[in-house]
Each structure stands twice: as structure tokens, then as C-alpha cells.
Image 1 (tube, one colour):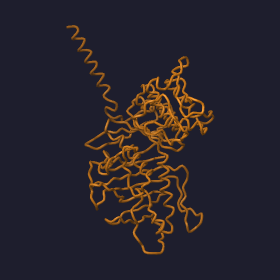
Image 2 (image 1 turned 180 degrees about the vertical axis):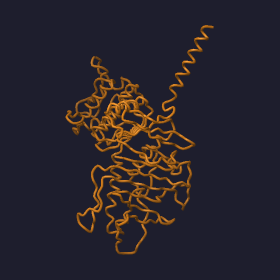
Image 3 (image 1 turned 120 degrees about the vertical axis):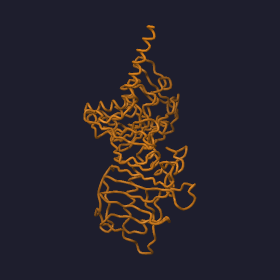
Image 4 (image 1 turned 30 degrees about the horizontal axis):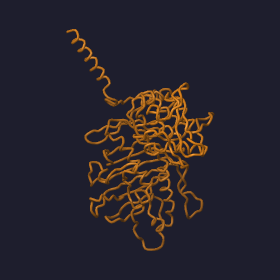
Length: 457
């Protein structure tokens, strides 16, 4: 679970400062204020860890990727090729990690359940800059109060291995070659294990970082239209797809594998379909929901729903569009493995204000009952108000949520953490957070008075 994030010279962010990432983190703000860029930084790291090419410092993506960021210079603040991109983040491990001393069997050198990673990347000073070839200048892991990493020592791609005070990496016999660049932007090259007798544990840090991003799932704001029938050949997708296109596959895979969902201590576990159907009913969208095969044993399926208990069953294509748009959101919340991080962009799109508020309860329940972290980018005042209400009621602790407002100042994005107290009140409410409501009311009152005067004439 992510606990902190910091970006420098990433797109519109010259410097975010240290950003606290809570179990439920929400980003609000005006259009083009940098909200999406924060999400894109995490997607960039995910598709980099997923890439099979270990020589590629960053996988900047294409039209098939989670995010397409163009060239390295495109993503630098101000498109300034002389700037350095700095990324850092901290996260909580699913279980405690021990670094064992290879010279003393089973003796733990360091132990902890939190890791920090940071890297600084810039365009190479050799070769044609037009190619936008990024190289790692420095890369570090922080663990148990100590730092391990690599740093470039010359204009050539040569690196030194870094270790904490009181710990020495022991060189193997042979010529003391310099190290080559890191693998991707976060990995120690194979030569580290060959050149040093006691550096094998560094692979544990890389593995933990890769596992973190393997458990990060993304659902974008533009979701697929519902279909009259779906084909499923037994696949078990990792997530819903960035457009929610694999949601029916996920529902059927969960049914096939017998997955059940915890609803909290002392409550009966439910199947994924039961949990989704219950939320649909609670949100007031539909009263029943079921995925059925068209023919027994076939691979074609249909999604049947019922508007209310007395209404006839219809296909999901024949009810309000919002039902199909929120289906991947709810399903992902309960399909993702425990310990996952979910990134949801504008999950409230096409939803009635009442349902937008109810969606906040879905997110809260997911965080509290499933140990799943959610980062949501939203424009919904109704979702925010419900979060405030649940804090005031005691159903959500202020420490469990982090609320941010993004805006632009002097050509750079600026991030403000909203100060939420135990009563759900925000003490530093930004000006025109959701528009100038009082200004609209005053203008409307003035217009009414003027219209009345005109009618009297």
C-alpha cells in the first residue's frame, strides 16, 4: 500500500512536495490542473515494471498502453531538456521483509515492513538529444533506516554501488570494473550480484517494487458501452481493463473459481455477483442483476437486470447508461486481491448525484473490509460531501482519507491537502472549489429582480 509520493519536473508539476497517500485518497480540482498527471506517474511506473525490456529506462507508452506520454522531453516540466525528472514513493509491505547476512546463515541484517524508492532521470548528454534517450542519474531504496542504490560517477554510463554507513559491499576477486546502468529505472544490473559477494539481497527490493505495481489496477474515465451478449472462454483477467471491457469475464471467472467476498466480521460472505447486486439495489439503480449463459455449456452470456421487483427482466443494454458505467467500478473494488491499489478516474461519470454520493460508500466499504487502497480522481461534489458526512458520523477516520485540491499557479500545478477534522469539516476550503455557488445565487436573484421590474413596466 502506497504511503507517500513526490514528483519533480513531471509534466505540469515542478514539485509536488511530499504527498501523503491514505487508504482512500481523492484528487479534486479544475480541468488541466494536474490531477491526472499524478495518476499518470503511477501508471508510467506500472507499465515500466510490466515491460519485458530491461534496457528501457521508462516505458513511455503508446496507444496500447495504460498511458502514452510521448517522448521523455514531452513529460518534463516546461519541456525543458535540461531538467531532471525525480520520482519517489514509499509503501507498506504485505509482510515483513528480512535481509539475511550471507556470511552468517539465518542471521538477519535488516528487518522492516516499509520501503522507499527514489530515482532521478535525465536526458543523456551523449548522442542526439532529439531521440530523447533518458538515463538514470541516481536510484535508491530506503529500508529499515538505511539506503542502498546506484549513482552515475562520470559522463559515461558507469555507476557506483551505494550502501549505508556501517555496511560494506564485499567485492569478488577479479578486476574492479565499474557497474553498468540500472535495469529499467529501478533494478540493479546482473553484474551487481557477480561483482559483489553480499549483494544478492538487493533483488528483494526490486521484487517488492514489482509486486507493488503488479497489485496496482487502473480504470479509466471512458468506459465501454454495454453489449447484448458477451463471449467468455474461461479466461481469468487480472482487472477490468482500462475501459472496463473485461468486467463480465471477471464476474464469470470469480463464479468459476468460487471466490467469496468478506463483508466484515460476523457477516455472511457473498459471491462477487451477490455483492455487486446488493450494491446496485442499495444505490437504487436496479433491484436484481445476473449473468446467464445463452445456452447451457456455451461461451456466450447475457447480463440481465430488473429495474424494480415488479418490473420485467431486461438486458443491461435496455436500462439507464449509468448501470453499465458503474458496473466495472463496483466489480473491481471486490475483484481485486487484498492488498491492491486501485486507481479510478472519474468513476462518477453518467451517474445521478444521489448515486455519486452512494459511490463514496462503495469506496469506503472496500477500504475498510478488504484492505484495498483506492486513489480516485473526481469532479463530484456529492462524492466529497458523503465522505465528509461519514467522517462526521465516525464511519471513516480522518487518517483513513486524504483529500487534495489541484490548481494552476504561474504555469505550475499546485497541490493543497484539505484539512479535515473529526466532524468532517474542511477548514481550508479553496476559493471556487466547485464553482462560485454564492455568486450564481446572487446573480440569479439580481436577474429575478430585474425581470420583475421589466414586467411591471
